[in-house]
Image (cartoon, rainbow, N blue to C red; front, side, top):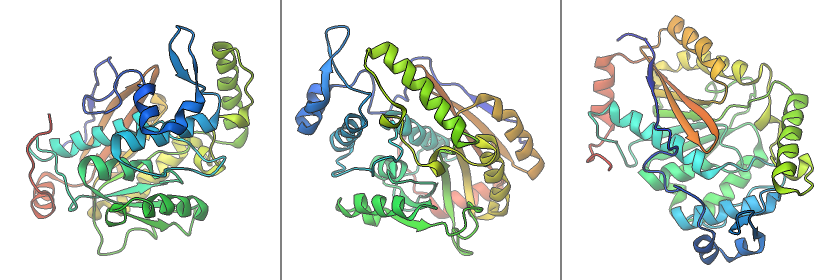
Length: 329
């Protein structure tokens, strides 16, 4: 099969149609589900009720409420200073990936425990395994180089009955590796996910935080300091070469795991990085490369997905591992 990229464009309206987080947050309903959220609600500029997004505790309370109300996940939390993910955007990645799997399966999204995903850099929040296990009953292995992050993710799993049957965690002992040391010789994954570090240095991350801080001050009229919001540990935010460098490593290592993974994927925040990634994948022998656009409000991102399996190998894989389900409306 040709490795010519196939561009899938999402509607300008924004979130995926199956995403549970359409429209504005319903703070009244969320507050009824999770009363702690009520303490962080403030009057909006349009006379409505909104959240104090300059307060990291408020953002965490919102995530707890969203995960409890929409997915039944209790006691979600992250340590101070760790990345607090935007739940709607992360859910979009999961749904876009489900569509890709369905396209590979005659339009039927494969669901259930036979499907196993590998989340590279699951972090303290484990957001992709949490959403994916609830929405599609997939199983996940989450990896990270930070023991504290994995300890927190495990606490979330332990606090919710049934999650341990769907999510397991592994420490990547060598920060230089991504798949090496994680995927066993006899192990197979139907897909991988990753939210790569964006910045090339701590200084670049701090400067971007300051820009966001200044924008928040303009829109809210409230003083904010960079450490008060936009959290994230160093390993979550930056690495040598930034996003482009990380993705290049991810792609290089993926070729070594080509026989054990159906679809590899990653978020790509910077559109300018796509062309080089496509060229690298072609050289390495990828048989199919997809770029799927995603929009959340004013933020535009994209999902880069690729496989090294030919048509015959894909057919044999899905026959052996994927259960057929009716199309999801």
